[in-house]
Image (cartoon, rainbow, N blue to C red; front, side):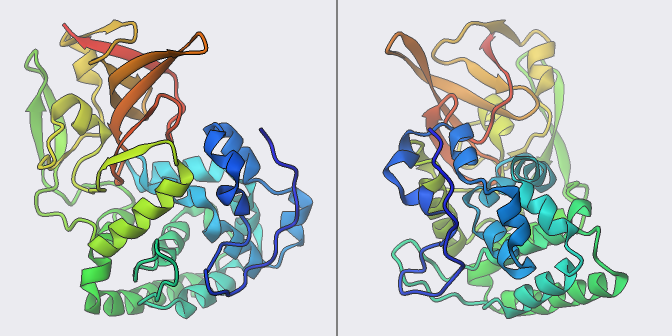
Length: 337
């Protein structure tokens, strides 16, 4: 179901702070759309994107409801790559000669403590995290001068001092910036350990026991935005940065899990699990992207509907249909051998 394009109103302030580029998210049609249809509905003609000022183009990017998917994968870099490939607006923004000047001005102009005016708002301003992620991508810094890179780093450091004073709001995203972005998305500064598959093979995991997790303000913002993006997915546990989908599905579904697992392949290669057809209780593996646990299978209109419970990267644990999620890789099913 594709909606015809209508040039949206430019960003403007109003009492409800309704986003002005993606009103389709508020439409009746949104809930019944597949992920691919939602992505298509959030596209704009290239001529329209090219006609926007760099400032308005940046606003369009920041308002994109799929920006939050940058936090739904094993690394922020993987999440950015997915969003970048899905939305040409990012590459057009990256090609603008004045992107450095505009991004720095917008970043400096953002308020640390956001005063929300609708029920889903919190004092957390997620735009800081979005812009910091964009700044750290080589794809987005093609037109940055060395002076602009230096100025943006200085701006981030200055804002981080202010955010540290509001640590009850920003502690989770502040630590995400320091521990993942500054380390080029490789979690090498965290302690690693191993867990065992049922057959005894060792699997390397990152021990996030001491990691600062999301604050209540950050959780409120994340949950509200994902409720709009995937209204048919049921949130069953709040976001956590301490464990990911593979750790949840293969190692432990406990809320006290503190291990982040990037590569679960040994569970499938050492004989611990065997490939089967879909069945309740099996692991569903989205190749190199995601793992979940099948909790129900029903027939709808002659088609099999697979319901999955899974942890979405740095985000929450959700119950969702097999395709109503951020992951689209080919799927296989695995049962304990």
